[in-house]
Image 1 (cartoon, rainbow, N blue to C red):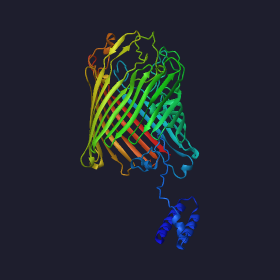
Image 2 (cartoon, rainbow, N blue to C red):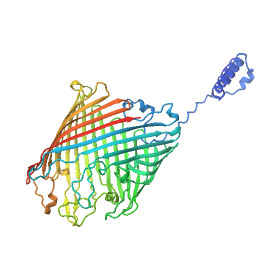
Image 3 (cartoon, helix red, strand yellow):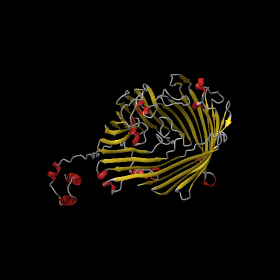
Image 4 (cartoon, rainbow, N blue to C red):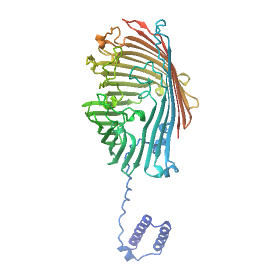
Length: 596
C-alpha cells in the first residue's frame, strides 16, 4: 500500500502542477501554489485512504490553436517579410515596402515619381530641286515630356483603409498645319492616344479591407475580369481562403483614353449623331488561388446608354504550375452579345516547358480582335463626305472588325560552363483573314487573307572578353502564299555588347542593327479601276547605331537614357522606278525616377 500510495501521490502532484501551469493565474500566484504543493508532498500530505480514492485523469493532447483566416489579397501588393528578404525582390527599384514598428501603427506611404522626355527629328535631301517638291523627310519633330506619380497609402491611420493614386501629365509639341482644308483640325504629332497633351488619372481609389470583404471606391482596373477600367464600386468577398467572389459596377471611360479630356467625350452612332457621353459597366466573377494555380472567370456587361446594344462577354484567365517543369497560362474573352458577337475576341494561351536546367521550350497562341464599342470609336472618326474632292482620300468612315492570329514556338538552350552561352530560336506564324473594303459609293473591294512566318535566331555570350555580354541575332519575315502578312517582307540583324559598371550601380549597352524591307506587291501598276492592287512597291533599308545607359544613383534614385542614330533609304520599284533621298534620324529618350 505504501508503494502504491507513493505512486498516486506522484501522479497527483504532476496533475496539479500541470493544471497550475495552464491556469490563467498570475505568475507569482502559480509559484506560491507550487511551493505549497511541494511542501505537502514532502511532509506526507494526505493520508493513504484519500490518496487511493483520487482518480487521476489521463493526459490529453493540447488543442491546436485555430489558424487565423487569410483571404486572398487582390490589390496587387506583395508586402510580406519573405518577399522583402528575397534576393530577387529586395534590390528591385519598384518593390513594395514592408512595415516597420513605426509605420505599422500609422500609415505606410510608398510610391515613385518619374520624369520622362522623348525627342525625334529627321533630315533629308529634296525630291527634285527644280520642281520644288519638298524633302523626303518630315519637317516636323516629335517631342514630349511626361511626369508620372504613383502613390500607395496602406492601413491609413493604422486602420482598415488603403488608397492608391496613379496619375501623369504629358506635354507635346503642336506643329503648324501644312494646309487647312475645310473642316480640318490642327495637325497632331504621333504621340499617345490622340497626339495632344494628356492629363491622365489611371487609378484613384479607396479600399476598406475587412476580414472577408474588400470594398473599392473610385477609378480602378478590374484585372481579373478583362482588365477593363471603371469609375465605380467593386466588392471582393472571400468565400474561402481559395475562392473570392468579385462584383463591380460603374461608368466605363472611352477605351484607350489617356486623358481626362477624352474619358467622356460626346459619343456618336454610325450615322454621326450624338449618342450621349456615358457608358455603364458591371460584372461578376470568381477568383481562385491554390498552391499551384491562380486565375479568375466571370461575365461582364458594357452598356452604352443609347444607339448601340450592350456588349456582354465571358472572360477567363489562369496560371498553373505542374511541378518544376511545366507552366501553363491563358487569358480569353468571348463576346456573347453585341456588335462583335458571337466571337472569340481575345485569346492568349501558352506553355513553358523546362525538361532540364539548360533547356527551355515555349509555345503560345494569340488572337486579338476589335473590342471597341462603335459609339466610342465613332467619336474620333470623320463621317463620310458625299462632296469630297476627287483628289482626296477619306479613310475614316466606318469600323471594320478584323482579327489577327499568331502562333509561336521557341527553344532556348544554355551551353558551356555555368551556361555561359545561350542560343535561342523561335518561329512565329501570323494570319489575317480576308475582308472587304467599302468605298463611299458602295464599291466593294475584296482583300485576300494574308499569312506570314517570322524566324528568329540569337546567340548570347554572357561572360565574354573584358567581362562583356555579347550577342547577335537575326530575324526574317516572309509571306506564305500570294500575300505576305502586312504585305511586306523583312530581314533584320543586330549585334550588341553590354557591361555592368565596376561600381555595380549601372550598366551600358551598345548596339548596331541593319534591316531591309520589301513590299510584296512591288511592280504592280496602280489605277483607279484596280484599287485592290494599289499597295506599296518599294524596297527599303535602315541602319541604326545607338545605346542604352542605366544607373542607380542610390537605393531610391534611378536614371536611364538612350540615344539612336538611323539612316533610312527607299527605292521605288518599277513601273515608277526612283530613289528617294536618304533620311537621317535622331532619337533620344531619358528618364529619372525617385521612389519614396
